[in-house]
Image 1 (cartoon, helix red, strand yellow):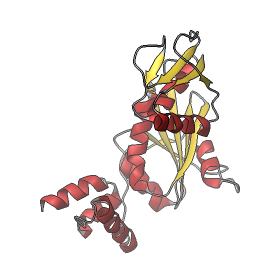
Image 2: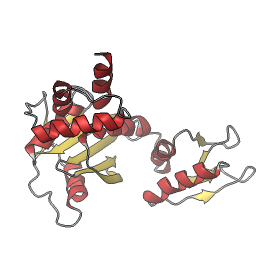
Image 3: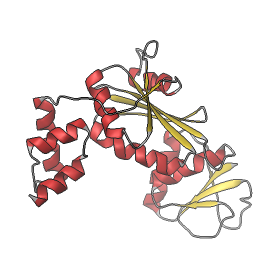
Image 4: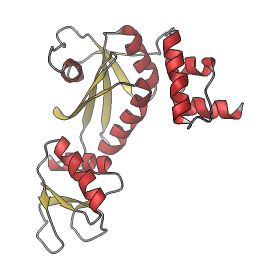
Length: 236
């Protein structure tokens, strides 16, 4: 199966091509009336190709196409490796195939990102594997994700890499079976972390509110996310 692209909206076209190129995928420009029998076509036009994905979100559309390029309706297993730290390394494998790798600086964004990964790839099973290193950040990540996904804690021995350490370690973590996490972790929020979450609440609410220290603590612990904290603060 090949990837075809037919997009009339100029801005959307460049967004989709950007996502395709990030993943190093080959694609073919295709037009109505051409033979598209061996293609899955990304398009913003309804019903003119045999097999197509109607684009609503560029990233979601490209992700949705990837399993079909490998001859699968969906991946059986998605393993997400997470290397915790100040910069969080993320690696995503579908049935042993590396699909994505990237870094994050903010745990607050992590829950939505992984929910989007699950929605876009729609695997039969998803497992999040987190390295044991950097215990404070590791525990925060567990608490943010616990209850949404199966989580395994992986011994990081032998996973570190000098070059691009975070994503390289995340790749190894993703493919290494760990111990299933069976509960949330205890976290003692630090003053700087609380202040940083309060600062982000002002930015996220367009300076309408600053959440309380108690709400900020709950965000740091992973009990609620930032949007929930802002809504609670607005009602006070």
